[in-house]
Image (tube, rainbow, N blue to C red; front, side, top):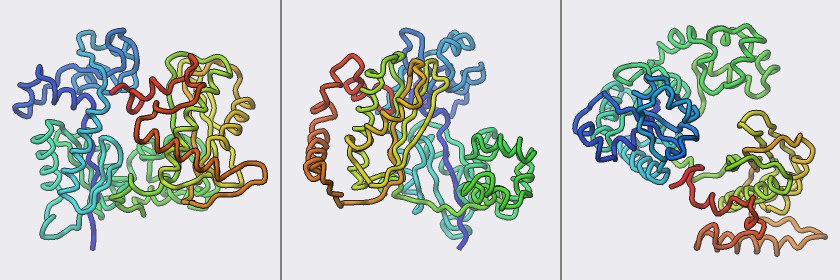
Length: 416
């Protein structure tokens, strides 16, 4: 049986949630009004600085964009309404939207806070016209949430992502490629429009002279493997409009492939002690999340971003034994820091643990009481799960450098 795969993407999600919920925009919610207020969601409206997290379409037309500094955004839109992000509200709204989509489709997978894949058999009695189905989704989300969305559809998930990008530019917010249309519509597109490639697109352009996706499709797969390793095979398939991935309804409930946690610091950290304190806190968080899935990992990674959120490094080391213990990974993280940090002030830190496997076993040691470490970490996990992250924490987090108390008040790096 053939399936149509779709990707629904909420338009300017954070800003849309604000416009849908605030009393001053009540008149807009009464009908499908296409004139958005000039609204910006950013970190610190009172002090008029921070980063733009989302903005309305009217703000975008004035030149405001996501990730722009708020000061610069207000130059483009001096009369914009600036509001603080409400992350818990956005998460709650996202969950409700996912429930609506899950009720409509037997195959549905949340992709991010504002995106969701779905699939349905086509043709079939229940799903006879993909365009009508997409229109129904848009109408239902608008009716229930007063949020607009764009929908891309095709014969697989990757094509759904590609068509979604095109749907964003269309007035009706819908794009569907039939199987026999894929190559003709895909190959003329720029190589830089290939979703998921990031810097690899530039490599294809410079090394192979690729201007279009069709140019990529003409490269022998062996050459792509040589240049990109296992990614070469993926790029080859994508350039031919193929994707082997399937809808995973329980994707957030299954095993982790890797686990990471990153935070932007409130100020530049210049001392090793200060950076090490944050590394320790992040390592605790990563290991706790890995333990919650009954997994352990072997590759330990550290990301450092310098002042101005520019420059820095990401380095990783693979160890022989699986671990889920902070005591095992922190010495490695600090060794990476000492080797690669050039003492430029640090503004963001990230810690990761991957090559994960499900493992309930304990590797015994002649030098450490591994059973004691195992029991202690799980006791701490249980206390924090019951009473909150700040119910028990390390003494180092009481220093001026510690961020655990401030971080506990946030979701996704922003205050609730």
